[in-house]
Image (cartoon, rainbow, N blue to C red):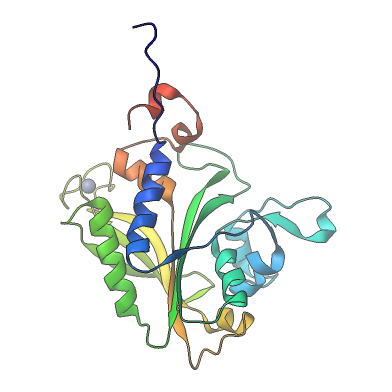
Length: 245
Ligand SMILES: [Zn+2]
């Protein structure tokens, strides 16, 4: 079989990103992309994170030279929603998959670059019930039809209220195992209703328009789905690993 050709196939992250984007495309969302090199206003200010806000410390940033230009590698995909909202009139539904960067040490659960996907829906009558409904369907699609979701209050400066979304553990079905750290639940994404200050920054009247946003990590979803214990496997380029998917 010396002439046998090696046929390539999709990387596990690509598979997961495709699954996620296909779900949202079916729900009427469009894919929007933005630059990886960002400025301070789009990455922080417009998202209700002013200069002295402690939330800036939550995201260690790669600043680009010369420092006085205040350019950076985006720490999340949220600036894409700012750029989109500045240019377009609501209503809209968008998702923005892309790479983000954090200036932090690499270990089994942290990479200095990874993928994120931001979702945003703005309309006249959007409520938390819409957010819950769509994320419930999403989690069933990605993790199986028996998946339940749990919503906990949380804090992100660009949403109010802010929420953390957990899914029921599909491995132990709630009995407790190592994947869910014996809690029966797995943290899957952050979400919330778009903060009025964010709408104000892009000149959308929050008396007329409201909406929700969510942010999820395709790397984390791939790790949970495929039972991977080290994020670095996804970026090692080892074909013996990649060929298992
Ligand atoms: Zn479990």
